[in-house]
Image (tube, rainbow, N blue to C red; front, side):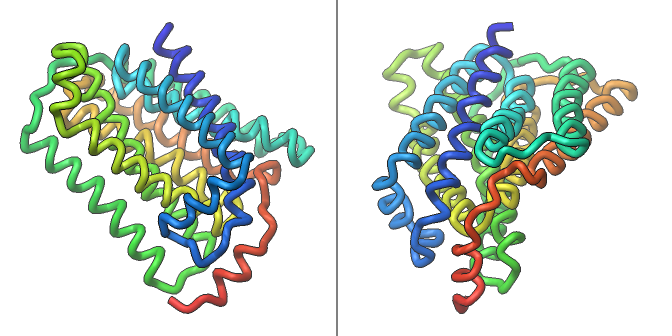
Amino acid sequence: MTVILLALGAACCLGLGFVLQQAAAQHAPAKDFLSLRLLLDLMRMPRWLAGVALMVCGMGLGAVALGMGDITLVEPLLATNLLFAMALSRQLTRQRLGRRGWAGLWLLAGGVTAFIVAGRPRGGGHTDATLWQWLIMGIVLATALLLTVYAKRVRIHISLEAALLGLAAGLIYGLQDALTRLSGDRFGHGGWSALFTSWQPYTIVVLGVLALVLVQSAFETAPLRMSLPALTAAQPLAGIACGVGFLGDRLEVTTGALAGEAVGIAAVIAGIVLIGSHPAMPPGTGRAETVRELQPR
């Protein structure tokens, strides 16, 4: 129960933080797209700093939850950050939930519950630096980079561009969560010396900066509903893949359990899409859309 409460607290901070970040990022200069200069410009905006502070708090709570529980349990719970984003967005836009909002809410909450009940996630021993670890990490990173390059180089509509960047950021955040879990294990076994003499903490920082640039570029480019659902769906999928692939987490593999897990994941994704496309999600100003469409690629 402690792990569940920590994960839900992390999801709350993340969801609220994403809304505040997007509200600020949509006013950033278009020339900063996919550049570190974007972060420097955003640092001058109090609302963005408040959003980042909430996101950091959420990541901290998520790290504690990952240290106490299994990534296959924590990641689906983190996906509920969209519910908290929706709650704040409703206050900003004064939109009612309606059928689509309630359907998305119940699908997301029910899908997370179904996955956890059917899969019964539990931990196990993992072997560090195995072939599977590097293979899965390489696939996740390569996929994220390919999505980013495609979004930057190919002429596509900005809504798809923002979704691809959100998807790439979500994959990186899922990988970051897996490395956070590894770092927590190292700290538990060897203390600070074992933690800071390993490569995982430094990789976490690099991945965090990379994901932050992708997320803010997506927020700058298009309304929140275009990018946050993709980010929210990709993060748990990448985290679960890492958890089962090289962290030693276990899920039930009976026919009934696999069916329940598949239904749960499908319901989560459907709920994310419905909530993310709800009119209550911040629509943005449209200024970034006009500028980005006219820029050559």
